[in-house]
Image (tube, protein in one colour):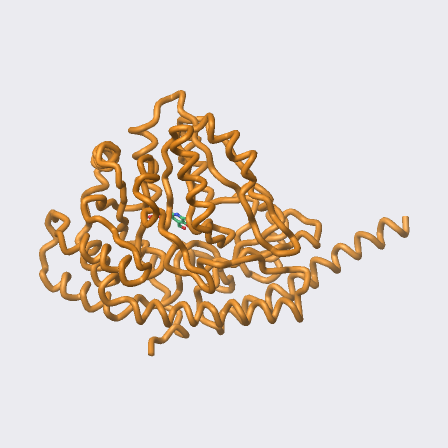
Length: 394
Ligand SMILES: Cc1ncc(COP(=O)(O)O)c(C=O)c1O
């Protein structure tokens, strides 16, 4: 039994860099203590008392391959893997090294904002907006629009599962994208950082599909989200095509991302070899949080409706019935109650009708957040009514 009720705040936490009375449910890290199995290995490394330059041992890659065999029942060839310090930094290095000024990048929205941001630094970015089914609270790809854009694309940035909406792409969807990449000859960068936190549906790692379809793919995985070690900076980049892997490795090296800090290797190996039980308990805890939030909102704040959320510890909350932009509402909620949520505007697409809530915290804080949210929505609606009365009485 692990203790997820304890909130482990740390010095210089970016998320908790707020006023004392404020409650941030924002950035993509968790409030939980890291698995003791990982901490033990980190203590051992620190006890070496020498933090010189490191190479990446073979054992690192074996631990990644074994994890995917055991947890996802797929074979991952060790020769396909490269170490890198992070997913976004690797994407940036790949764009700089593999694209040129005429290249076109395509992303799906609403989607993780940094894809577009990194792409727009030098290239043209096309956006294909996901279709939202309000009844089913589910997103899908607009295939006609996407294919039209992919015809002109050099790099498609995929997020599998898709953040922040928590959508797990089906094998059929993924195969369709891979076939399009062969047809129109564009590369795919697939960010699979949220693949370990899934609930009722299984995620399909892109590299587990038919190798013949993987000629243009670069896949990024990392234990950083699932094991709360984002600050340790570790990721594995998987490139099945040998020629493309050489280019990817050169890109990673050009940004010096192949150099691991002293904690990255022991943390990754410990997560992948000893982290399974902790992760299973974490997912149970997150599932409880999610169910609790859904019940609470349904009964007390029906204007805020959770959507899909098949994966990740973000809840994507539909506020469309309130007729307000998410940015305005988050500012109101923060000002009135101190609860800080992320406005979906940041992720484009139909994001301005959504709030992103990070639920990877203690159930006590979830309860606190829900009470604040309930109060804020009551106040917000009252404000609306007051305004209406003012207009009607004029
Ligand atoms: C979809 C997605 N990709 C990447 C990252 C960041 O990964 P890294 O720290 O390895 O760049 C995040 C962090 O929130 C994320 O949500």
